[in-house]
Image (cartoon, rainbow, N blue to C red):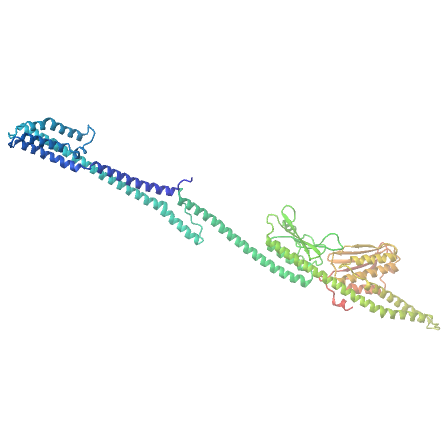
Length: 619
């Protein structure tokens, strides 16, 4: 069973003390009043005994009237004795024999029984009372007076005791009440005022007030509970404020990140350049969210491994970089070493970049291991991966549509050339053949033969170039890059050569626009055609290399080389290759190799945007 609480215990003790004092006071008052009950009657009766003694003495001295005088004294003495032994007197006499009052009463009784009564009864009626008789009577009356005095003193003592008990009870009651008031003030009222002030302060969001109440009663426990509550509220309020600040900062970061993603999405869809459009945005996102570096890998169907397309932090210029004036992703080794990119201080999050049915790439996000990633940051990165997926998918669609459009236009051009220019050239070749059969005599014969040879050579070269152009125009690019088309071209010329033509290709996926791919392919085909038909070569190799930011295409053979080591004059194929190189913004060189053979070198820098130039669409 739970013990009574201290405050209730103190109140119970005080109330019990007051009740006990009241009970004791009432019991003592009752006992004292009971003890003096009848004392006044006893005092009156005792006082009457003195008068009765003198009346008996006077009665004895009076002359007798008749024969009944002696009997009258005896009756009067018996009546007097009954008054002396009256219960109203004897009940006031203590029962203990050694009590002074009991001794005095016993002495009076003995003197009455043994001295005064016998003398009164034996004294002759009507004779004068002698001095002895009078002295005995006065001695008896003095004893009775002393008894009365003792009764009066005893009664007054009891009344004084009653007054003392009442004053003591009153004093104790006053002390207890004062103690109760002081205790209530110190233990109840003052703590209550503190608790009320603390409650008021809590209502005003002031949690610094403390009760600091001592003791183990209910109010002290309540004060301790208030202090603990204030401490917890202070901690909770500070935590709530901190959470509110962190949530506000998180929302501000989220808002800034969303604005950044919105701006980045417009840039990605506007300039069609993943690197220039994504790197600045990703770097701002890293600073905003406290993450990084971020790397983007693209998946290509011609490559078994993902190809890195974007990074936000690198100590060396990436392989795929096409703009050496841009240093956005380059950082110093010191900064790079501080980035969380190893297994000890960093963690990596991989997010797929995909549409509903196609996996386009992977977004690799590094972040500090001790910090982790918040849910908001994960959602923002997922949104970013969705935006990148949309941008990459649309870019690929645009590239494929441009490639298809270009292929369709070139197919139309090839058909028109075949139906018009090719037939005209064939007709001119037949006319030249007819002119050769004519028998021209005289001085003009040699001139006519020279002219016919030049016409025949020009027509044959133009016809061959036309057929090569028609073959190139009819060649379709089935992939966004050059790799498949080059492999088909190498297979075609390997059949014509009778030996495999070597191919070394390392261009990053989507490094070239469809227009750049077509021009590069045509230049490679022209170089291969010249090597197969004119060089008498046994080994031919093709190298298409990306030497950032430049693309280099080399066609080398081990044939007989160029006559006199010089480039042929008025060679239609070389003229067309140079025109194509100028279209690409580059140059082409044809030269003999030191180890023998010819080397055709095409160099150009790819454009930053994958768009079909207007001049090519009109060719």
